[in-house]
Image (cartoon, rainbow, N blue to C red; front, side, top):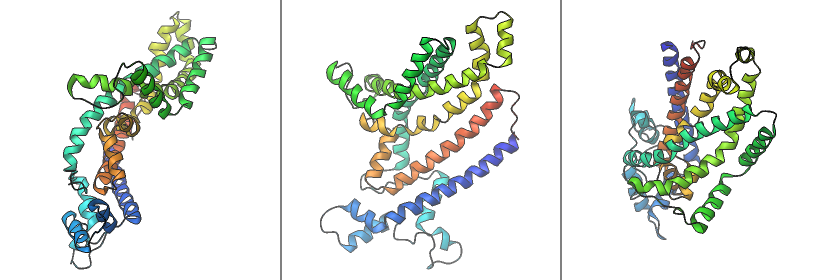
Length: 327
């Protein structure tokens, strides 16, 4: 297993390097440092001296990939790509390109806490609710409850998350006045601002996840070991919980684990609509301002979390099923 993990880490490093290079190339294909300077400085009359000062202050006055004015290794290291992208591997995020955006590392740590308050309850509720709903449909399989449950799942996954947000804000905030329509507060006051986005996000994901889990459970129900368990006289709910659920854990771990990066990076849509100052809203603001420093950092962190998540998922396979061997 150790050799497998080391190999995956090496592959992950190469993937991160490729993602960084691709992000850097795409961004500077669309924008030039001069364009970035004009957007951040603002105003009607921008002089060449102002643009030059802005670029010097942020290191964008250097060549992008290769510095012919330097010698030896500095031809590679004294470039924008090395300073602004390769430095991410040492977790040196630097400062944002905006005039008052501040240190990126500080913003990531502060906003990650807010995103976790939204995403962790959502992640736990999603796994529990989807699994329980799917098991309920399997328990009543080939009945009207199963039929209408599947219809409900299809309806829920067919509706855009934007509809849930708009309808939920209108009903629970404007009409019933149970929770604030948007905003955020620290401490225990955060609960009243987070409960609505958590429940709406759960509804938007429940249909697809429950339908997927139901299909996996139905596949397990038809296998020989389930028939053997029933022949021993075990009740149906015991068979489902003790045998079917345990043997379906690998696809459940795969499905649930793929959502883990969003737990740390936040939800772009829900944080933006509900005014929650998490990492998702941070990314939206950075894209709108064309702040490359923030965008490259969030792309790097997202790629890093995805790679780490799938390594952990592979390791979790060996815990839930001793027959799995990583080689």
